[in-house]
Length: 331
Image (tube, rainbow, N blue to C red; front, side):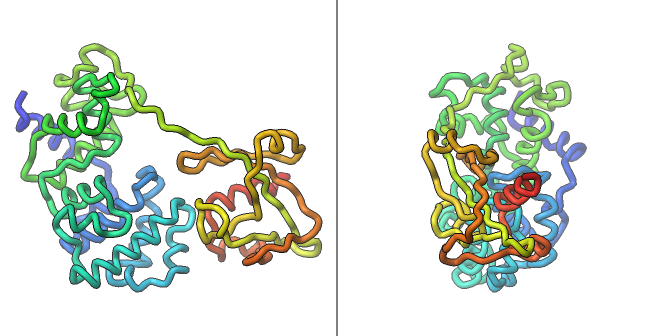
């Protein structure tokens, strides 16, 4: 089957099955650039279903690139609150400011210039080129990788290297509808060519897939190292009021400058020896095991204050801190 027929089959499937997503609305070219920029930043490390309500709220509160470049940090972080990986929000604003100052308020139309913008790397620059500017580029995300691994039955370590998989992208060919085509391929990966139990009966290119013919859908991947770290969090509650001590985090690289409970990293042996309640929280490539130690005396820490639990929604808190709040409420 020719590349042209493959693109036709994929686009036909997409036109009949694509998800209705808020950043796919029919808007002006300039607004499409903005929608693509915001959605791609949000979709880094985060699933589509999680991003949808955040994107809608973000666009409502910060409707264009110019306003994003001038938005105050408190409003920006409130719009991002709970989405995690907060450096994305800071980089998004930095990018908006640079686009306004250096590119006359419009995203640059080439990969090299896009990659000079904070938070935009190889994948995001290519996604913007394809989706916002309709360039014949297929961004290589996890969904596209998975399709190619199965189509070509890539199992060995050298076969699943980025370099080799990039070469295999020629399988898809090109389309005049480059924006739709890039999204269509990623959509098939997300909805059809799933990591476990792919829906091959619904796939428009199953006849071209070696894994389908062999009935072997296991995906080979390089092992990602996930660190396990141990912490003790100090839980101090004011005796007379429902207030808890929080600190502005200048200690750890994660959740920089956000509000967390006072905590410290400890050795595994010490963590295991404590009788305090323990919880697990996963963050990026780190699994955090946290002991919640109740404190009677108020800890003296710089940049600390008492947060009233009744007014928790008025503060900008990461999900990490909210999860600990939820745990101590049962403790």
